[in-house]
Length: 153
Image (cartoon, rainbow, N blue to C red):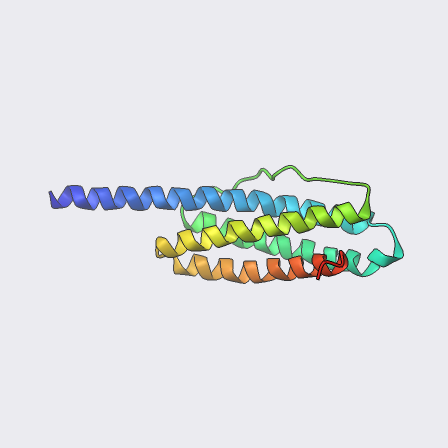
């Protein structure tokens, strides 16, 4: 009987870990999308009013790459395979819409990382939750930059 309890606990841990890995791979795919959009949008934004934010988007792209590297490392640590596929990038020729696309993406990413932090805490993967807290802090800074550029704050 004790052996089956141990096997059940091990199976539950394995299922929990797989759920976290799957979620992290979804997050990683979202980071790839963000990198592409920030690279393209930083080059494509038109208008003097967007000069400062275009420079910010270049910085955001580099930070998103750092996030992708950290998430991929966590996936590997947990025994998973980091995805090589990104979510489909969005595009608009309208500069304001580009920023709105990025803002929505950041807000979605923040919500996703909050869920992942909760899952990590439940699974007692505290190092993972700390890594994700650092990432979410930068994602929130990106959200603030985009809201400022769009005059939403």
